Image (cartoon, rainbow, N blue to C red; front, side):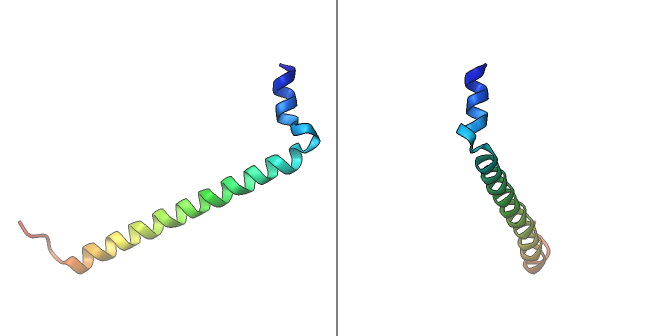
Length: 55
């Protein structure tokens, strides 16, 4: 259990390390959400430009 506690303490640099991990995760998550939103918008635009579906 002590090893796990040492791991999370990061040798005294835990504040900096976990903050960096959090910011990176937040940034990557934001990029993912923006990309998905843009993809859905382009998909709707493409469907509208294509016109009625052929059967």
